[in-house]
Image 1 (cartoon, helix red, strand yellow):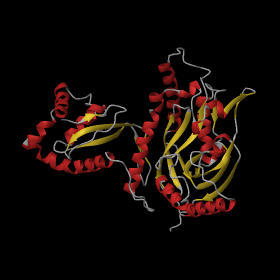
Image 2 (image 1 turned 90 degrees about the vertical axis):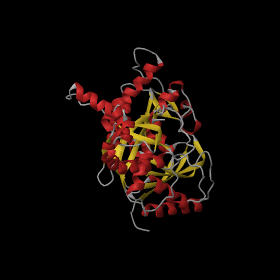
Image 3 (image 1 turned 180 degrees about the vertical axis):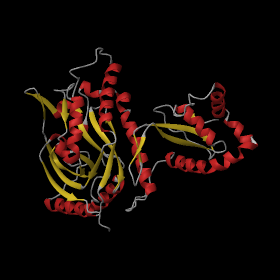
Length: 403
């Protein structure tokens, strides 16, 4: 059986022997960064049932043809174009041709690299976390984030625009639980968090967040003047780890909270500032406009969360986010746009939202920033960080000291 492109939404296959494996192909994006190069944007395609004995350079060319990432040069004459196309179609010929010996030697190294990549991606990533991240680990973490962001980008198509029906959003609350229209403007409905949530977040300085906020407003405000909540640009943050959250509250005395804050401060002193780049902006089915980021240098989010886990042993075992993710909320759509498409058809409606997100990505994809602070936040109101509620913040600089 030759390799097969996996259909969107399908589960990976289970192999009974070591003769087959899966390949994950990232394509259509660009590389960013200097010391650590990360792949930004593009698409992710899976190929299953790749045969160990048949994998070669020409097999990869055939896969590239299938993805549409390899085209025959237009300046070639018809005979040359047919020759190139034939090379991709008759990969079995190379297995038996004596003239292919040199190609097999040169592709052996390529195959080994592809095989190692396939092994890593065909099983769950559950590597032990080291305090010093190698380039290989950083690349693996970036790859995991890229796959996750691709899935998040498909959420709107797969689940529809629930926010148009005032559906469920953050913390199992509906939009009507969180916002009200008062005097022609959107106002958050602040409710006491009992007990207060204790969150650890990385902070994005206004040096960077203001530009992002202005770009978001320029694209979305003309269409959602009374149906959008913009995240306060002075409170852009990346949620890292909760000492207590709404699903599994952990009660603590003032002394215990102070001890937690001191433990977080000690963690911050051992973390290096993060240089990050915006991979893409996505709109979820619940109406949240998210910035999804990659790390080009500094301490990886997986390592940060592992250190916070060690420093806060009483924290809930189940955290709210994947250990690899680095994302921040830019805005929340609360209902229908005031400039809807001419047709009310749902498919056209989704395309309207996709077009707005594409405009924003054209403005912001590849935007770079530095993260230099870790905050320990007591949120006395539900979603205080997101809704400008009541909270107490302790700010710690990332010291990058060796421990």
